[in-house]
Image 1 (tube, rainbow over the protein chains, first blue to last red):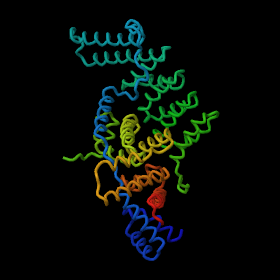
Image 2: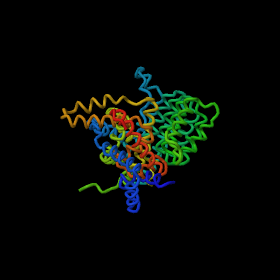
Image 3: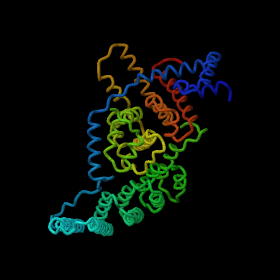
Image 4: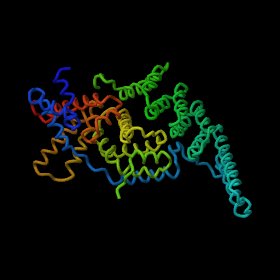
Length: 275
Length: 185
């Protein structure tokens, strides 16, 4: 590398004040002696200083309000996704006889019975008994969700996933059920909801592995793209995984382009030519 | 009394369930994000939407936050992924004419200020024409004031690559700017 090339590499750090004093003198001396480098540095400095004039309009006041309302909503429900369906608009009686409402009613009855007993009987004073009851309540809730996940109606399965998201202590069986839904559920919306429900658990290597390995089983390009986005967000070294996924046989052209796009923007080798 | 806790500490609290603490990070960083997106997409409304989406994604991925790199690196990595998604869906840049109109119409200016603003508009348009990675590196460095090391962390590349990108960006910007302004080099 000749002296001019070396100095060119130091011009930006020099402008930013990120050079050591030794380099500082080296640059100054070179710029005095070399008219071409001096010209280039002057040109760069001029544009650099002019960039200070570029203005950005202030964001609207609604940005803060909107953020705080979203945060409040998030805190209330802890939901990560919007439910992808609206409530069925049938008669009240058909609502009542749907499995969702029957399970919900059962849960409400259990809660009412529990608190009534606490209030009237005064028999559950010990903490051990309370803990046992809490555990039983959790088991019932877990069973209710697991039962909903096995319903033939995709709306019921979506509802189960929605409830599982709201429940912090999901447990291994719930996690397994979500992973199963992600792999095998015939409905794309349910698989997508399962993926979103698993995202908060992305700090667990086994969850990340389950999501990545479910890629092959996805029949919908949309799901594959969603998984690719997940990999880019959650994995420390997404390039390697993306390269493997790119080799998947009969990959949809759009999905392949999506992988290539991400690889292009993630993978930035030292000597690569700029895009 | 000024807030002493670091971004990393606050984000760790968010990760551990104190969701409300995200509003502190919002107060500290929403303008940086908004400016970043504005320089990238050139539209106020879209920049606001993308800014909000970054905070939502941070909430969604909070449990995978490790805290072993500066918080802004993690934040801007999410932001640039979002900007990729945005351009992927649009496949083209927002026309910057709207932005220009917005800037001019805000207040009447004397001649010098008009001239200066016109140059700034040329520059803004020139920035939009730069290759993605160069544009990003330039914005992080010049407008966000991030050190080269942190930019390298965000772009997942060596520091020298960042230096080269910024250098090329400024040189290219100079050429585009002079062409647009009708100045012979």
